[in-house]
Image 1: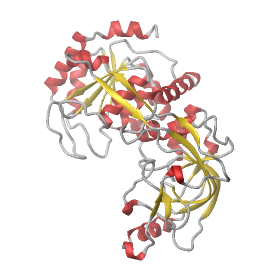
Image 2: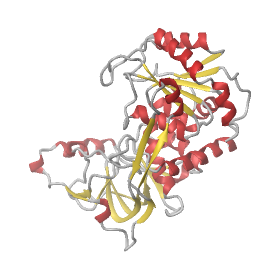
Image 3: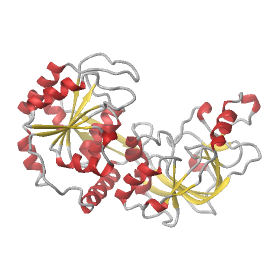
Image 4: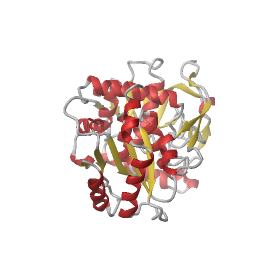
Length: 400
């Protein structure tokens, strides 16, 4: 069982109210670049990631589209492990404050940077003590894709340097599901400490910015660090016995559904599933809210073909390898520095082949449901089999 701060209900209300006051009623925020912030007890920042860039090729996307090779340029900055003593941590994003108004400035990509969203210490309130922690929360902490792609690499990159006695500070109310993911890196639930929507006081905080920089979104960072993390995760999945059991045929498809999503649902999903059933020997529909995490991981590793509409459910493609991933998206092409590109890139970095299939229609609008013409989807499946038969690729994966 993870330790929990047990925030009182009024804390979020009071901090939200204070943040919403007019600027004239609060001290002006002072932003300190993380590299110039005062370190802990003279400890120097430790380099975890050297800046660099690389080109990621997309062979299946190239085969499907024809023409010029499809590829992405990935860039990332230097990133360090920082240590800070006697600081306050505010809100469920645990923003680091050195006093009532001095905080780490933009550029870490860990926190929301709009002033209205910044939760800050209340005057005269020190906050409850949380001891010594490693910072593992921030903006979008409730999203599984963000947590796996952006937050867990912060921990992984510092695994050999951080203090192993420190607890991991995670967002309040999210330790239960985040512990499932962290367990795949050997992290025990007992090492997690749920934070607070109010103010905490930390004796020491170890902090790593998101590994990606402004030229890379989402902020995955050095792909070699990311691939190493995924390899460790896949080994632990195997040790857990989650790869055991009968496997469907090579012409099987796992469909990751968004029918239980609050927004951006695929309105004609049933039609596309029917088209897939006419193309594959077996199609299984996976609704994530109906299946435990370990069963999700088992299924994602059983099926040779995986398809799903754009959304956080597709983060599961990082937890398997050697599969063909079909990413179903809006629009006419994948735009770089978007989550559509991120899911494709992650699928490939994990050891899969991936292709983005687009509906060819105008973007439906932020948060709105959308659809994919059934006839186009069926034609896309046929074309994919013609230009890149799965069987030949499957053989090559077995030798890697």
